[in-house]
Image (cartoon, rainbow, N blue to C red):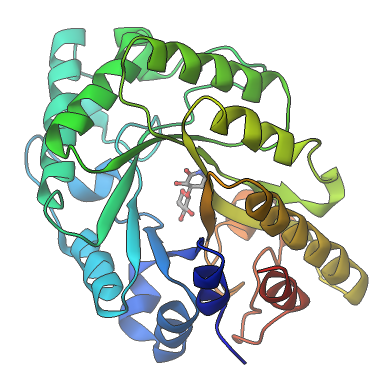
Length: 315
Ligand code: XIL
């Protein structure tokens, strides 16, 4: 009956979803749930580099602005996603030499963050995304190969300069529990902050799968980051299964959603939880993980699943 956002607000947390511009423009059922249930929005794709700066210093804002306008109308905050990533970045960036690549990165951050710096709807950014490999070494992306690790500090400093009030996050996947990758993230955040690099927040994507088990020590992991002085948040939660779904898998999935919400509630510095979509009608999972899907809290026809009830009851 009462929307998720009411319960989250009462707890001092956000509950959010990533939105896609297509259904946002064309489907009222999508808009009604997106606007009614959530108090936080992330653009699923519309703020990525390919969308915002497809050619050098030529910016296109239609998608990003549509997301921000929707959020403003619905009294929601927007988390900007994402400034520096190895995916969905145009070829022209990837083929630059080191000095030009660094300059392009700084210009991109200045323009994208700068566009919304005085807009109270946009409150935070994923400055860098997925800088690690799963074993905890640096990902050898084109950023790393051309610029070395210094691109990370440079990106955060550029974002701070573009909007001194925005909360600046580093974001990754498979870092929800305590493991080699999350420990590498922990060490990086600690050393960046020791060097006065403006890292305010750590995002834990949370692309989970019921067949792999729930990660170990999630609350302890959030807490160790919080103890460094950063805010923490779940940024891209979806919990996939091998399709087709059935009642047993739905029930197990619901317990995973409960665990995620409870871990955030247990850590005061956990700001909230963003789901990577909200309906199985629109989800990246079936396109990315063969034979898997049904990862979200509403089914393809916008009916609430057991996972919805789990989030509702845990909040
Ligand atoms: C995904 C989107 O959901 C897809 O629509 C797109 O084709 C590829 O990117 N980690 C991230 C997100 O940080 O930006 C990704 O989103 C999912 C994995």
